[in-house]
Length: 628
Image (tube, rainbow, N blue to C red; front, side, top):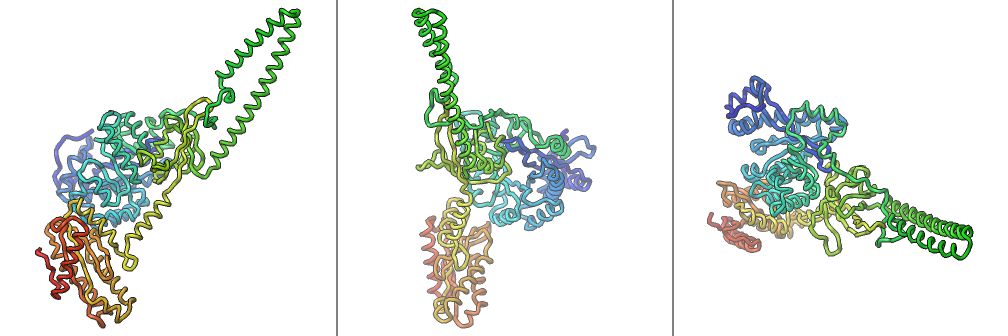
């Protein structure tokens, strides 16, 4: 029962926390394809003093944030959720469960958040990869910039960072580029449009496909009817939660669910209709007639044979005595039956051999294969496909292929390849490429054979090569490609940014006098000093022999000139402490250009910053020639 409306004061909130009246409820999240429980979202409530009602979060969370109590509440919720999760994971049905906890703005700006998370997970005995941290894009926009490093650190710990209420803010796609997230929850306002038809549904379908193409876990929120489940399955959305499956319930009800249902499934999802598939359909490129031994063909042959024999019997009966005619007819019937039976046995033997051969090919094929009907339902799959999906073959039969293999491309490429994403039953995400071939069985049914190649290792290697191609091999900072990409993002993202060009004065003398080994070490020292001096959100790159670039994102009240002067001081200090400075005088020249005010084209900004850097070099005063 919900308590009466009205906010809570700081004293009331502290009293509730001190008295242990904080309650954690859980809304289950299910695999829409199998009906299995995969995760639980922790939702906070406060119990009334009289114990008769619950106060919902919309009545106290805003006050908690304003009063500085939200971090304490979040720690209590996370501690309780992880403790409950440890108990559930000790059961067979809950062994792979995860728990999702919402974090607030105050958590994200707290530098101790990773330590808090690690400590709570360790105390509960739960691995951090079983913890999902949910944050909204609205929250990201309210905390400003500079929190990519925090989210990257949480991800490196194993936590699954998920963007909640996706699609409701103004910059969703930009956030996916800037922040390291492993999951997306599609807002209920979009899910409600599924199954309604019209342009709104097509927009939602495009949104779901886009999210799946990113290779992250996708969860649909606010599912309220079976029509929405069916639409999500067709689109390949793997996970969902909503009132159709379950409202938020307290921990003891989750205990009961896992104890009474060994699979932790929900009937509304598990009871989807499936069709038993034959062990091996008779498949050929063309439809055979009598060879297929179809019932209609057998009836026609029988009727034709009977007609012929009737005519023969009448003729013979008129020419000879009736008993002789009957004997002749009987003999002819026997000969025809023997001939037909021999032919039937031969055809059945050939079909058995062909079926066994095709089954062997499917079973022994190392590549995942799936045979589907015209509606995309799986009729037959091989062990490699079942291993890719993470389910038993018997479970896969009758399910929609698109529920497991979600295409990223609307149309195949010129060579017939379609890129797709597979979300495994256990939650892993794989990138695949599919090829299809239309077939027809002996009964004339249209079938489609899907051959699937797991390209995840290839894409990982490609990403590694791309990353290496974006790094300067000597210093480990970015290269010119990184600068161009960062400038393009800065221009389109609307952030106030500045481009800083740094050049070392007298560096050639270091190489000529002390050797290239010493010069290389000095360059590494400068790169390290720039990286340490600037926030992780800023981009540092080497674009020439002794030229470096920094792209600065400017917070409110921070001027580019002030940051440049501080960086100049830090770099000169690092150079002065390097052994090369004892033999050769090395200085620093800096040039500055403001993104937007001085231009938006990368080449123009680089040219202007370089020009101003050389003006500073010629002036020998190292003043930044820019009106700041």
